[in-house]
Image (cartoon, helix red, strand yellow):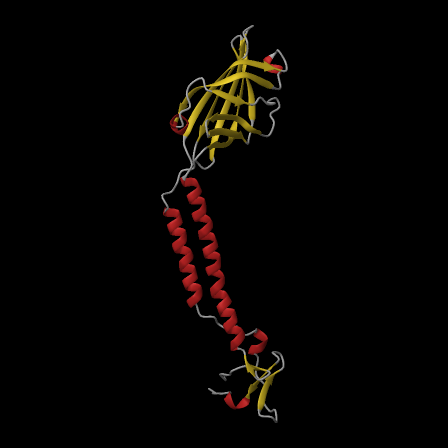
Amino acid sequence: MARFRATAYVHGTKKNNSLQIMKTNTAIFPAILAASVLAAVLAGANARANQFTGSIAFTALGVTTDNPVLQDATTFALVHTITTQTTGEYSTMGILDFQPVTFNGFRFNPPISSVIPLWTLTMGSDVASFDATTVMSEWYNTVGGGEWVISGSGMASLTGFTDTPGTWTVNLSASGNESIAFDATADAIPRVPDGGASVALLGGGLVAICLFAGKAPVKAQTAPACKSTLFRGMASGYSANPLCGFVVPARILESKNK
């Protein structure tokens, strides 16, 4: 059995240049990827850090619908909507009870896809608003009447804070010959921060990948066809493998028979 050791030449030039380029690119790409991903994660964490928490409730002095039979109504409109209660940053903002609010009516049966904005409240230079990005509705029969429960999710906005995910609910109810009653709530519910632990773990993992990619040896792979027996006997003193397209100086071939 023979063992061969040789250095391959292509047109008289060693192939180590292309291998060096390949090794450099292999080390650089993970570093670029790691930096991009880490920057995106940090940006998202900073944005969530300025979200707010709070709830606000409303009522209206008058409600109109497109059908006097509430169960068959499809749209509603409000007359003189006001606040009734606030908590969290809505309270800190100084929103008082009976504060006028612009609350937009909409089609709820069947529900439209979104209401933007659902409501808006302005106090001096401060503005609070809520965009309903999803809308669901369901009718419930009650003793002597019934009620529409309309709800969904959306984004709460408040001056000085990052837009915050939230939920909202509207109730339209009627009993006998009484007028339609309206009440609504909206809650800002920020995403729970992880204290930076996930960011630190992700960053450490990506740095480790970069270091490993930069130090990992690059091995030149030889195609199976190129591992076939090299052919000797050329008058020029070179041996050639016609399957690989390169020549090997015969003088550096070492053969050891066992």
